[in-house]
Length: 269
Length: 263
Image 1 (cartoon, helix red, strand yellow):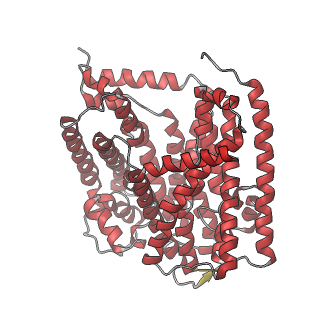
Image 2: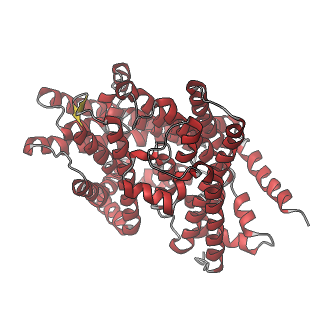
Image 3: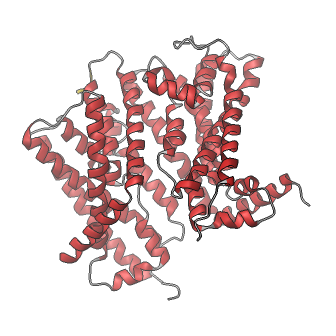
C-alpha cells in the first residue's frame, strides 16, 4: 500500500508530464495566464500618472497587496485546480466524479490530484514581479519577525482561496452547473483584496471581515508590513490573525465538502 | 434571411432557458461593478472632474461597462473553435447558409437575451444605488443604440476571427485567451481611455478594440457630440468592414486546410 503522499506525487507527475508535451503551447499558455491578470495592474499604474493614489495609497503600496494576492491565488489555482468550480462541476455533470468514488482511495486526495495546471506559473511569476517591485520601491523596514511572517501570510492566503474553491466545488453537488455567483467570492475576493479595504462601503467590508475573513489575510497584514496606521480601528493583533483565518477557512470548507459527499446523488450519466 | 431569423430566434429561446445562470451572472457583474465604483471613488478622492469626466459619470462608467460584458461576450467565446475541433463544422459548411452569418445570427440571439436580462437590470440597479448619468435627449439615445449594435458586431467579428485559429493549431484556446485579454486591455473596459497617458490612448486607437467599449461609453456619457460623434460611429463602421473582410479571407484559407477525421 502506497502512502497518500506517494500517490499524490504520481497523480501530479502524470499531469505535469502531459502538459509539458506541447512545449510551445505550454509557454504561450503560461504567458497568457500571467498577461490576462497583469493588464489590470498595468492599467492602474498608467492611470495613477493622473490620479497619484488610491485612497491615500501609492502605486507601490497597492502593488504590495496586489502581488501578495496574485502569488497566492496563482499558487492556489495550480494546487487546487481539481476543485475549480467550473472544472469540478463538469466532472460531476459528466459522471467522472462517480468513477473517482469507486476507487479505493481517499476522495479528497483524488480530486486534488485530478488536475494540476502548470501554466498557472505564469500568474505566479507576474504576481511575484509586482510584489518584488513593491518591496524594492518601498524601502520597507524589515525585522526578523516580518521576514518570517511574510511566507506564513502567503501560505494562509493559499489556504483561504483553496477553501473558497472547495466550497464552490461542493455547491455543484446540488446545482450540478457551476454557479457563476461563486465567482463573487473567489475572483471577486481576489480583485477586492488587491486594493486597500478602507475604500469599500461598510456593508461590503463587514461581509469580507465577519463572514469571509478576507480582511485578516491581506489588508491587516499589509498594514503591519508597510508600517501604516490603521484607519479602521482593528485590534492590534489583527495582522497576526492571517494563519487562523486561512486555516480556519480551509477546515470549514473541508467539513462542508465532507457533508456534501455524504449527501451526494449522482446525475446518473 | 428567414433562415438567419430562425437561427436568431432559436438561440434567443435557448439562452432564455438558462434563467438561474443568467441571474447569477447578473449578481456577479453587479458585485464587480460595486467594487470598481469604490475604487473609482477612492481615485477621485476630492476632485470634482478628471479629463472631462465627473465622478458621477465615472461611477456610471463602471456600471455601463459591467452591463455590456455579457451582451458583447467581452471575455471571449470559443464556440466556433469547438465546432472545428468536434467536426460539427463539416455539417454546417454543407448547409445552405453562410457560415459567418449563421454564427452572427446565433450570437445576436445570445446578445439580445443578455442585454435584456443582464444589461438593463444592472443599469437599473445602478440607478437605484447611485446617482448616475443618462443620455440626454432622443438623438443621444439613438446614437447610443447604433453604437451598441456596431460594438457588438465588431466584437463578434473579432471573436470569430480569433476562433479561426483552430484551423491551424490543435490548441487554439491559449491564443484565444491572449487575444481576448488584449481586447479587454485596449478597449477602455478597465478604465475610460481618457484617463490614460496620451501615448497609450493613441496606441489603443490604432486597434479596433476601443470601438467595442470606449466608443459606447463616451456616447452614453455625452463626452462626444456633434461631428466627433459622427466620426466615432464612422470609425466603428470602418473597423467592422475590415474585420468582416479579414474573417472571410481567413475562413477561406482555413477551410482549404480543413481535414475532418472520421464520420
